[in-house]
Length: 335
Length: 207
Image 1 (cartoon, chains in turn cyan, purple):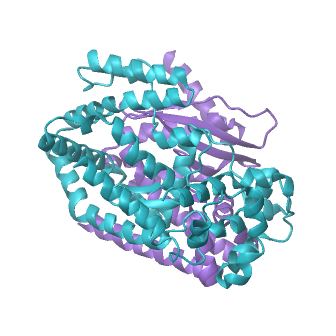
Image 2 (cartoon, rainbow over the protein chains, first blue to last red; image 1 turned 135 degrees about the horizontal axis):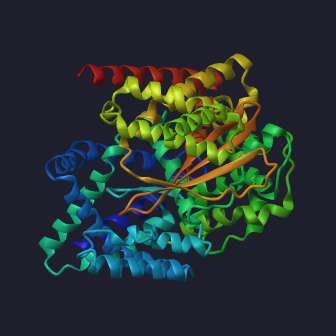
Image 3 (cartoon, each protein chain N blue to C red; image 1 turned 135 degrees about the vertical axis):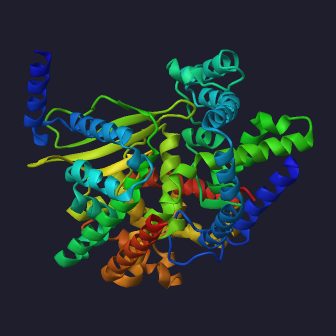
């Protein structure tokens, strides 16, 4: 079951990347070259949620009293703390990792198999770590945004990390009896959904475009998580153009981002040329000249990049492309 | 005597106007006041929309700078909008934000808000007040308030929840709307969004 499900999800991830990468979008977000596929999958997930998961989760919430649900939440959360601790250590944060192992030890014993989160009350805060964040911490860019079947918003980096690493270290997958295991994993899925019911359809209400709202929130959230809630200020091209001056190098870098990433949108080009590693020099040598002629619809993005008043700071170019470059490398090398 | 002391204290508290408070002290004061009211008011906990709106109007909104927020969300297209368009955008965006996020008040359940020390130097006119909302069983969620100093006191112009800016999260969508339909197209979609929210909220109230 695990293998089949993982193959299925991994396959759809690959299909999304390879098959639809070339023809997915025009004109949209450079971080979301698979927008066509993503929107379709988002719609399917949303439909499944409305018809199955949300009603089941609501029923669960209505039937089970709150203290019992908290116990269940704590129980699953406690099992997760070990892997969280390992990731903290892998990221070089030994202190935080020790805290996670301390949480596990304390909650598993005094907290009666994790049913009570006594460690939080004792001042050991829970963390949120996974292998995608560990990769991000060591400089692996997130790559393209991908909506996975059932699992929802993800990225190339985070999707592969989740399917092929995080799941390996998820104790629930190692329950001997297959039927029990599937029930427990489904139960955890429902329990997680139930914990989100309070937020309700906040995002749907707040958004002009539900899909884009969730996507942009997810990307911001993951970036923040990689930096443990304290990301370096993101370059803000709009701020720079508002005041007509460049505030720092990263702002200049950001304004150059769209041309570089247009290559990502033209997935087929990148993939066929994938034997060679894309160096930043090559990326930037190609970027400004080519897409303008080849893709008139990309013109909008380009003009945005060369907004008057924004001077191009070539010194900062290598810094820019980290995310874009790793994204490219991932997209092209993985298959 | 005790009573008299308390009276003095409360008079003093009202005398200290909002503009004299440091940004973090201001956020703390507003959060404490709002939480106290939410804790005591069963109607608000049950989602009584009118009462929630009144509370937010009275306590929270005066401390927000909505035109700055809208300018941030619209981004590079903001200077291209006429003053009338900017006014319309601000008013519609304000309505949207207030309508959707004020209902989040009802989800308050004894979480503890911790304030991190301000990092900024004394003379700064633009600071980030960083808080953490703690609840056993889940990791703490950061809520950060970007604030600027104005003649009328410190005003919030962005709220970042768990790393997600409620303001700049709109930027991609707004850019796309302006690209497709111009600034007027964006205004039109905001108006129709607000209208549809109004009808759904009205119908859920009548149930």
